[in-house]
Image (cartoon, rainbow, N blue to C red; front, side, top):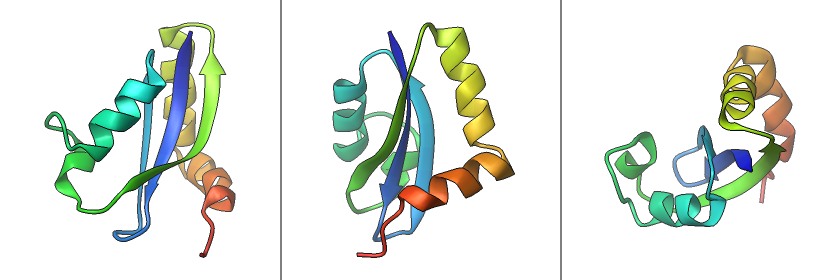
Length: 83
């Protein structure tokens, strides 16, 4: 099972869209700044705002690409709260 997920960093007003086979570990990696990836460049907490299950990695990658499009990002804006 794979997941497509979306993180939001409120302090930097940034969105991250990714896919993984282990969602819990990946979220931990993002918040502990492990690895050399986009989210490690920004201070603040990354919060899960959206996730979807996918049958396999190929399906997850296709959905990730859709969510990264303009229409996908517009869809995701509804999950960002203004708190």
